[in-house]
Length: 186
Image 1 (spheres, one colour):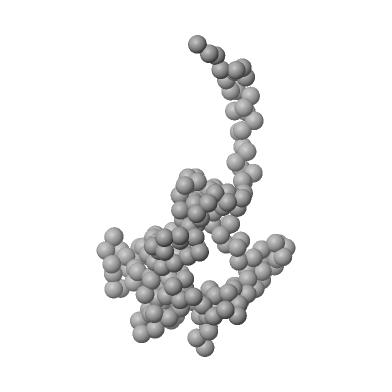
Image 2 (image 1 turned 30 degrees about the vertical axis):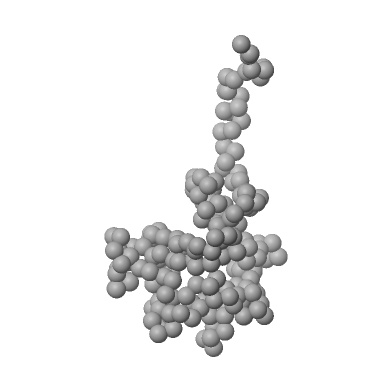
């Protein structure tokens, strides 16, 4: 995805060559057999050492599955993983990059379709949603920070608690046996 009117910074854009398919830990030519896909992120705003990183995703067994979606993308646009593998993976048919405003528009259409206020959702909602999903799945704050490639703790403002997080809290507080006195000194 590119910022509107700026073209694109190729090192920060995902290309077909940056996607690899695996089955049982081995690279596979028949990507339809893949149970895992790795995505190489060559550069990012928060990548202070410009070292890049990879993210491996395994089949989720659900409708939302990175591996299934990458296979479908490769089936739909095979040249983007072969002859055009050095070009941006997400681009329009005419070769222009997929702009941020286009993705924003799709997010807002999806919000309207499910009956929520579209003005409350933007491209950054994807990062917030991903961070919250990791939190609610029980992953550590450190892993959330690494997966989101955040250099500071500012990402914690994105972490929204679920109402389910409060289940049992009051009961545990009442049952707690700690004292509210100053620590004893020797």
